[in-house]
Image (cartoon, rainbow, N blue to C red; front, side, top):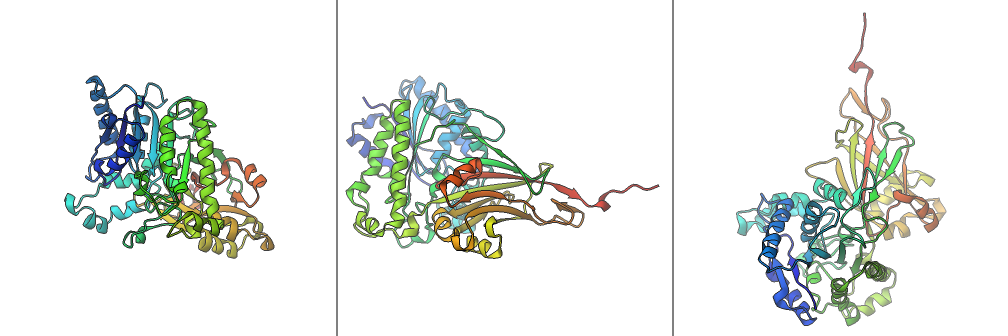
Amino acid sequence: MAGQITILHGWNDKPGSFRKLERFLAANGYDVANIWLGEWISTDDDVRIEDVARRMQVVIEELQKKGELDARFDLIGHSTAGLVMREWVATYYPDGQHCPVQRLLMLAPANFGSRLATLGNSFLGRATKGMANQFQTGREMLNSLELGSHYQRRLATRDLLDPDGNGTGPYGPDRLWPFVITGNRGYRSLTRRLINEHGSDGTIRVPAANLNAGGITVDFSENAKIPRVHAWSSRTGDATIPFAVLPDRDHTQIKHPGDKTDAVAEVSERLGQMILQALACDSPTQYQSIAESWLAASEETAALASDTERRRGLFRRNAPVEQEVHRYLQMITRVNDDQGEPVEDYFIEFFSPDARSDASLLRFQSDVLDHVHVNKLDPSMRCFYIDRDDLMKRFYRERTGDRQLAASIVIANPGRNIRYFDKEVVGAEGHLLLHCDHEPDRAALGANRLHRNTTHYVDIIVPRKAMDRVFKMAK
């Protein structure tokens, strides 16, 4: 018999928007009486994600003591609710033990932020979204949702990644089972098309939804030519968290599995099938099998970029253009000096080390790098949005010898007395290889390698040098 389910809404949303999902579940064997709709404050400026997660724990315990909520239930969350769910797990069940939830299904979760968070926190956002709420839009919530936020990094290092060792976390085949489904289709209405971004569902980027993240620390403090690179360990071990990318769903449609989309039934019905598949998962073996099948489905979505005939054939109308289904990745950098202080004024250069020239640097900037976001609260953190398909098709050029992608850093000195790296050099002399045009070479890169549909953290440590005149001694 199907058990109880709790559904959580996202930022600036209400439980009522999930009635369609509730009806879909009821039509597939779930008792409506066993479906709970969580409601939480998301647009008041003083409420943080942590506050919601703590209050959520209190409410769950109260309902379980009353016998109204089962000791075990499933959890479904949309958009920002993905962060609420993860915060709740990381705070109260950091090792995954004794958690009342086994299956956590995330629909288009904002695991690594949203470009629209900055807009929501702006004057325009407060004037439009906040008009009905005393011009509040949820400042604390949106600060956490901003690309490259401290909150996202802190949460990721608690439940997904360990920068310092081999710590375990709450997720994996032998622990809790998260599932992530996201769309790769922008909004279709004329007004909302203005906020669309390729490689996203109109609100959340595909790599920002994916929980299979990575991280490295690049330390230039001892050698500016050859940095020491330390790979962060995964708290999920070798397990892959199931992640599916659907070509026909935008950020709103992902909540409505029973609704038809512009795609044929074969594609349109896939969301509902995946939701039911996740909720029916009952063994570690099946969990790993779902991860493999969802990866194959995501690759089918990606293959549409190079197959115009199939792309048009799968959509009855409004077929996506090639760029919409490209695979992207995010790289989030944080730069500190060797005294642990943030460095805010820097530039990351991407180029081909085979033929290091301004031409490859400019080609990457114009053809491959779609967006760079400097975090408003901490400019030492930046999010780079990279088109992986254009990297392969437009950046790599055999005739010019551009077969690899590397990155280096240039930093503005803070004043006349302090230099970074060397007294006479403004940037690193060395570079870090991140990608190659052939798979065997890419595999050899290990943790440095940039993966499609993935968010990568790159912490950079640079040496801070005082000029001779800062201190002297004389008789």
